[in-house]
Amino acid sequence: MDKHGSRVGLIVLAVLGVAFVAIGIFAGVAQVARTLREARLIENLPELDAPALHSLASDTLVAVTGILEPNGDRADAEGLIIYLEQAWAIEESEDEGWEGAWETVYRAMPTTTLTLTGGSVTLRYTGEIAIDGTLHESRLYIPEQGRKVDDIIEGTLRHIGFKAGDHLTVVGTTTAAGIMPNRVFGGDRQALLWHFEQRVVGLRITGVIFDLVGLILMVVAGVLLWRQRKAS
Image: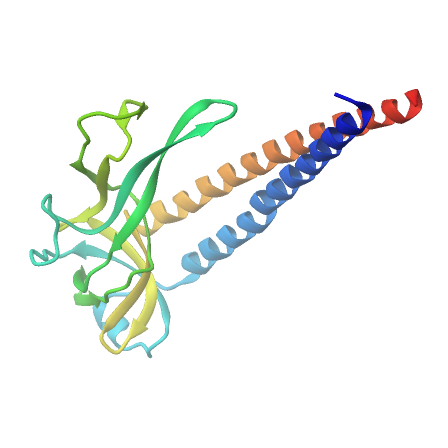
């Protein structure tokens, strides 16, 4: 490679380093701040029973914990009522070969019922919702052959979510007909707050790793560019 090509390659390396640092800052600062805000907001919400919930005005943010009631008309074949449908996607990575990840293709949040102390509340239908915590999993479809990563065949479909009788914490806003959820978590409120704490730790570690890699790339590119200029 000539000097011009080498210099261009080093500039690209430096730009890549800047990109890594930017991603690290986003994960370690912006995403952490967003997660902490959401956690503090939920932590400060009052514990509500059914009568107290029904007395609130519409568009009030709430976090309630209760038991998911049966909904045979909306459940899948394995009894999951609220769930994510995910496909196993495989793609090639330059560094680690083939990598696999679950990609969400559908979110099922039908109108259903959550039993609270003193009564129940209707959870309204929505297509935009976060689902996490303790989940059930069922495999819908497994291809007979194909590429495998982690012993899972590409194109495998699964559902992960909640069945009747599960203990759930639902975060959402009140409506005249119940709650419009934005997050359904498998577990109680303390488990949800612990989930946020662990996510913050993971984001901070990810941010530090990206920042270090980015700084190393920038330093290497800078030193080599300086040597090139000095040699010329």
